[in-house]
Image (tube, rainbow, N blue to C red):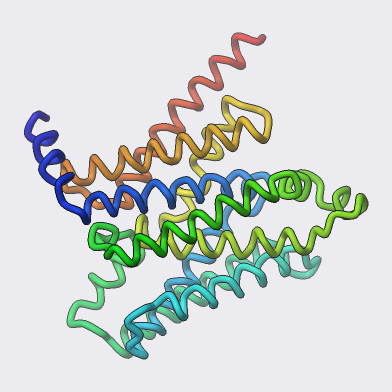
Length: 284
């Protein structure tokens, strides 16, 4: 254990490790803020669906030889997020069905492209790294860190500025519409912000694990707290803490970044579940 901490101290001297910690904290914070809204709107798996869409867009970017995948991935993911929220309100196509429809197609299309037009000699390793997270978060450039910081800042500012409207739309959309709130506009804002968070989070935990980054902190906080504000604050604090813990553990023990963070969040959920059960028993 002492050797692991010594190894961590040595790694902290490198700029790329500090970059990874900064981006990891920002992504965890943004994911937790949107996670509470998505869980309460019963649209938790939109993160899973959009991550698959982003995977398909990344495959297209790799095939056409784009050095900056963001130019394709971000617009495609934003449009898909808007379509998912719109079709989720359609009586003919329910939210879970639309997520499954788009995500499965995008995942299959992306994998097919990567096999038909391989960009390296080891396609399986590329796919596995993209789906489950790789060391990409530990190879971020200063420019990528600034882009992530800027997008994260915009996400937090939007959530704070429109907090009351998002709160109203989350809990009772029909009543909010009746009181004059432009629910379609705020659903659009939520969709765009979700897409931005998904694209950022792919570097941290990979396509298949993004849902955990969004859902686990919100569900953990809901086991103990009841108000929207307290759940949001607890979710943010918990998400940042588990992301840091996962990153530190990954560096110290050489484990994959994404799965390590998700395991840390799962352990935190188990702890909060026990605390919530104990509090419930005490009230009785």
